[in-house]
Image (cartoon, rainbow, N blue to C red):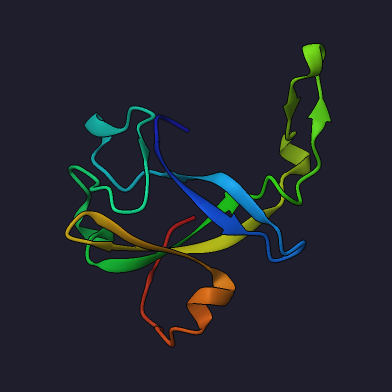
Length: 120
């Protein structure tokens, strides 16, 4: 799998229609040397972004903490097992390295944009 960075955003679950706060979108859109578990938010700039992911919309996905089944482990810690993960598509707009928009699939469909990069 290797190292990655993350974009964190509040995203509405399309199944339960509840907002998942600080939802993690794992990315490998930057050169390998800057992938160090760095966390980005809307408005931040991705350093050393690879050209194919800049100035475009990117379709990726995320693990939904709202509708995925949670397991309680030792000391009350909850987590999501791999087999219990529910993933949903999400679209991220990057302009000159800046994270400009993060939209759910339903929100993106309303934009009418047909050209984007697939990243899964």
